[in-house]
Length: 112
Length: 114
Image (tube, rainbow over all chains, first blue to last red; front, side, top):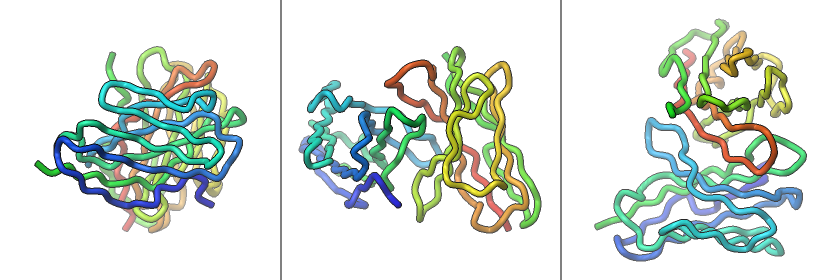
């Protein structure tokens, strides 16, 4: 049963515009959320995280928003750059476990 | 600091054989987790070790096992390989003490079962 869902398998955005990647979760016990970026032939790279006590966290061009009531989070990349083209994974964890529960990923393509 | 290293990077095995994959975490990290990535299922948690103890296990059959050594290096073993075990196996490390924590991934071992 997929507890973290990324319903858009792919997204194409023009360079300089905003990229918005979405993620939904079903487990109300999740209290920590992370975004990872993955290039082919490499392992996922940690991007940004957010605790459930916050609704927004920024790090440079990356901002993550959390809506707990809707069990929804999103990653905003502004401005998007061609080097951002990769697969983005949303992940969540709960206080009762030590694993990360991943979505299936969204492939982002930023075109010049 | 050096990142997470995994060996071998690529492996081809035959059905019924067994395989051992190795992971060296980031220096100072005491937690090691293993994940299986397949096109259909995405990234799925296998197990996590901290100070040589398995703290959590995912929903995989007993053919999948692991261990952690006193230097935090970890191995995972898959016995009686099946075609469906073909996947990218990723190892991740983290400090492991307290929450929240982020996990840092290695490049993975690509296992192909024929």
